[in-house]
Length: 159
Image (tube, rainbow, N blue to C red; front, top):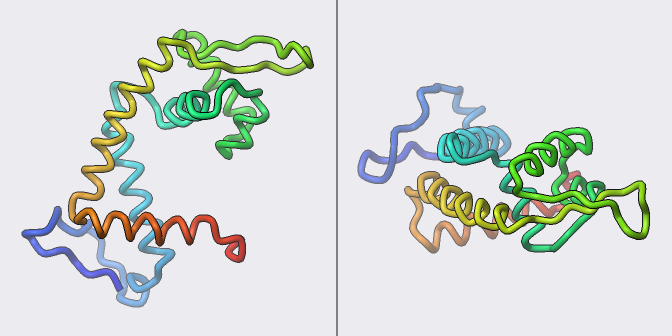
């Protein structure tokens, strides 16, 4: 069961008072931690970009050029939503769309030099958000948290 942090450890517990039996539910705790994480990241990126931009640019930088369908699948983003993200990234000169030389019906997306620069900026903001979110945890606790969350995330039995 999650405990309320002491004043010396971190920021105050959220101003919510769920019943004890609800507070003991891992799904409830995970959901509220995820909501807090989303707020922290959104706040950090308020003036510099969007989480979806970061995910797309990071994927292109890490894995290289990709079709829109491959990007949507890789990032679990709806294909229609991805079109809007890519429209914005190409308009800002952060990514480039080219017809696939093997299949003219498809586009291949590449990150531009400006996109790599933007990604570096977003990396710093995302890292700061992680520090904000995980401030109550020491390095070994952070490592353990990531290991446990990874096991939950990639557990096929929970599908």
